[in-house]
Image 1: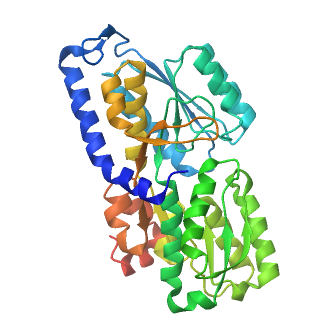
Image 2: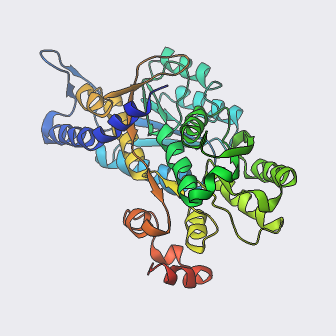
Image 3: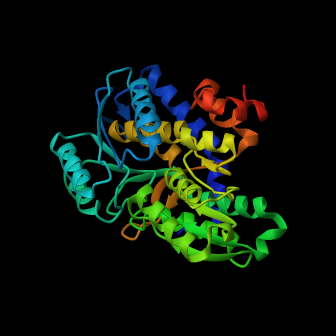
Length: 377
């Protein structure tokens, strides 16, 4: 696992890396499409008519259908002058379904496959089959096992650090005498361990973690049941804060706290900046979420995929100047992107400014008064 310092260095490189990639792609548009290589070597590769497979893991995480897929598709179209084809499938949180979808893309001879695995280990045999068929595989958002060619994601350890710091800042001097609940993500998702490690690095020794849970398939229903158990064990009024690894679980946690009679909501963290989470932050029910630019991640993955499919090594290398290790593969070329803690104070300068949501989408009649209180209009 990479160190936090390594991740921070990677984040600082992003702007330079993306600029380098953009310049390289611009050169291609000037007339060198099809001729690639470095130094004295060059060979003819596919032009704009590439087929790119995109496999996303579930629909319960709102960003995948609302943001990642359409942004990825748009960028592929832009890079291929509208001639590139995106083969898309969502696994609905089923490893079996994703395996079948993956094998279908191999059967259809996709030029490259981008996969966000439901289960990082379970997907490895399919990645192996793709390699045997000569199809490159890029892991997206979650690091897949097997012989993948590249990885694009955000700084996952930093995500946990940001969440942990938010809890300590919210509690202030009370932190040392407080009990919190940790609602971690799916243990089959390799990002979960990184989120957890980052959070524990901030929280351990500063606060008492009274109960800690893993959440199969990031299921809000599982998180709700676990929160019910935590409340029964600790007492609803004794829970000072809840570390929730993502927004879907945060919503379930908050619902369960309300059901148990919480009169004042403790600080609850999240991740993904789902619309309902942003609205909960506006109303004061959720303390914060981690905003990860879907645009940067989707665009970076699309650029990597098209460059790999077209054999444009210079552009591909410009995007993947960092490396990560998986349990099966070492030194995987990677693009690691920075993250932002989203609170009431910066909604306008993050998700609104980036065009993820409009003020009208956030400030529906139910939230108009709360929006007015924080100057969101």
